[in-house]
Image (cartoon, rainbow, N blue to C red; front, side):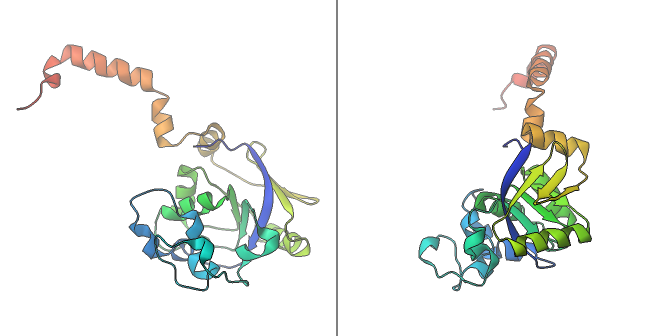
Length: 214
C-alpha cells in the first residue's frame, strides 16, 4: 500500500448527495475475480452514454459530456469533493478500488456510509470529513475556478484550497497505517520475526505437527 503524507492535486466536485456504491462501480463489474481494472468503469452509468459491460474497450465508448468527471477542467483530478452520505448502499470493496484505480488519492465529504468509510482506510484511500459549511466553501471555490488545486496533509490533518484551510479528525491508528503504507498484511509482516520464532519453537516442542497425514 502506498504511503500517504501530503498530496496536492486537482479537486473534482461531485456535489450529489447519497451517491451509492452501485453508482460508483455498477454490479455487473463485480464478476471479476481480479482486484484490478475497475478504474475505467468508475461511475460507469453516469460517465458513458452506452451500457457498460466487463471487457469493453472504454476508449471507444461515447462519453456523457454533462457528467462531472468528463469536464475538461477535472481531467487528471486526484481529490474527490463529494456530497453527503457518500458510499452508501452495498458493502462492496470494489468501490474504493475503482476510485483509487481511477486516480483519486483522497475524498472529502460531510459524511460517509460506515462500511465504505472503513473500506477506504483498509485500501489506502483517505476519506476526510469536513463540516457542511466548510464543504460549501470548497464547492464554491471549485465552481469559481474549475481545476483548482487542493492540498491534503494527513500529517497536519488539514485540507487547503485557495486562501482557505480546514482541519479534520482522523483515528491515530489509521493515520499511522496510511502514513506508513501499512494494510492488514503489512501490519502482520511487521511481526514476521516473532511469527517465525514462534513457529520454530512450536515445531521443536510439538514435532508431530510437521507430520503429513497420508
